[in-house]
Length: 263
Image (cartoon, rainbow, N blue to C red; front, top):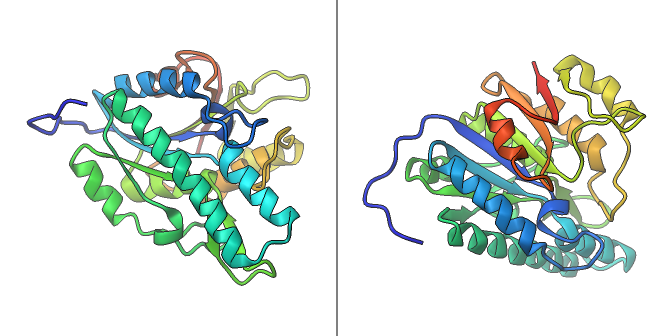
């Protein structure tokens, strides 16, 4: 990655949440999807030339699998905290390397170190992320495990919640959820082109779960997270299919297949 002498002038800020189904093979434990990851990084690199970016990662076959394993084995909290945090750190470092190879410098912010979640609100400190953005560095965070007062002694903060709260705190105008489906789907499998914020509660009731290992509740949790953490700076939230080339850039431009949510 080449060094840049001067920071570029970028006014718009976008948060991109890369779902686990995009960056990993969710049916194969601890397996990255390097081809898709690299293609998506090239799309993000094009956006990075003219806007500021922040990136949030889903757990995929790393975090979700590790957490499900610890839950299945009823592991003590200390062991679960180490295993899941290590899995997500490994995934984040891998994504950071792929981003760097495509000309995008990033800094990793582990939520277990900066967040004190309350329900669907991550309650994180984003000041350092703002400092990174001012230097044209991309803040990179991810769904994570943290110590809590549950009977297991650990809880999960979802990347879906982090994406919305981060967007609000750093002044993003758009949050894009990159998934393996074409948006929020009807019962017949067709994407709903547009929803208003007040319609999300009804959409949540009809939303399906995930077909993969998922410890955070799939699409229902995503929609709840969007409703709970919406703020005035965010003008649109998009849900697009990142397995199809050009969909992320299309959402940035406000066009193309997917579901857009507006206030």
